[in-house]
Length: 47
Image 1: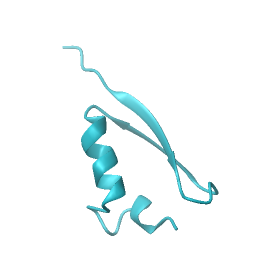
Image 2: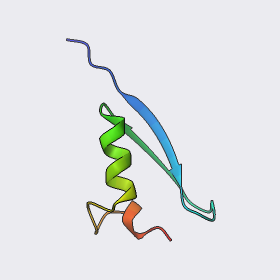
Image 3: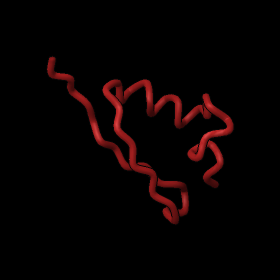
């Protein structure tokens, strides 16, 4: 079985930290990052 996915790179406002991730449903993952769905995650704590 073959599965597709995306590698993505995001950064904080000041561009001092990069976050690299892999996700098959990129749209939902970007939503999770923007709205801090997981408040204890690394990306929710980047200022």
